[in-house]
Length: 374
Ligand SMILES: [Zn+2]
Image (cartoon, rainbow, N blue to C red; front, side, top):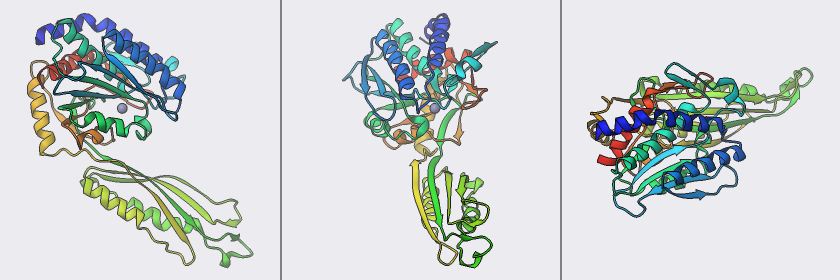
C-alpha cells in the first residue's frame, strides 16, 4: 500500500502543483470576504470533483466556511481541519509567486494552501487505489483562522466532538517535525484616563495618562518568562493630543502567549487586575485568551507515537512545539488531535513564504495512511 500510494502521488505531483498554484492565485486575505469566498467556491468544486458532499456555512462578517464529507454517517470519523484565509494583502501573488528548484514561493502557499492540496490528494490517492476506508472523513476549511476564528470556533468544536482523530493540516515545523503543542494566545487592551491640562500654565492640575500607562507597560513586559513559555508584548500604543497638553488618554494593546493553561490564567488575572497608580487616574482593561493552549501532555505523546508508527514506512516523524496559536487548540480539548500535518517549508506570513515541493508527495502519502490505519 505504501508503495502504491507513493507511486500514485509521484505521478500526480504535476496536478498537485497546478492545483496549488490555482489556490495561491485566488488570494484570500481574511478581511476580504469576496476574495475568501471566491476561493471557498473553488475549493468546493475541487471537493465535488473528488466525490465529496459539500456544505457551505454562510457568514456575514467573514468568508463562508466550507466542508466536504466522504462516507457520511460511517463510524470512527476523522476530521481534517484547514483554513483558507491568509494574512497576505491582495496583489502579493503577482509579486511573489515563483518556482525555484524544489521550492514554490507564494502568499499562503505554506499557510496553508499546500495543506488543502495534501489533504485532497490523500483522499484521491486512496480512491484511486480503491482503498478509501469506510469511515466518515471530513474536510473542514474555515475562513477566519488568521483573525482569531471567532465565527468558526463553534463549528470546529462540533466537528471535533466525537471524532476519532483531528488532523490539523497547518504546515509542519521548518525541519518537518509535527506540531505537538501550541501556545495559548491572548489579546488585551489597556486604557488609562487622566485629566488634560496646559503643559505649561496648568501642569499641576493635569493627570498624565501616558505617565500612568508607563507604570503598567513595564509590569506587563515583566510577566514574560521564557523558561515557562510565557511572552507578553505591549505591541501598540496610542495617546496624547498635542505637544503642549498633558494627555488625558493612553491606550495599549497587549499580545500574550503561554505554553501552559495555568500560566495563561495567571497572566490574564495579572492584566485584568491592574490598578491605577497616579491619584485621580483610572484604568480599564479588556480582553482574554482567545485561544487555549494545546499542551504536549501524555495524551499528545501517545497520539504522536501512534501516528509515528503508522507513518514509519513513509517518513521518520518527530515532533516539537510551535510558538504560535492555531485552531488545533479548540479541537484538542475534545478529540485526539495532532497539528502540523501539512507541507514542509518556511517563511510563513512573510514575503519569503515557500514550500518544499517534494513534501507534497511525502505528506499526502503519510496522511493517506493516517486516514486508512488510525
Ligand atoms: Zn495557518
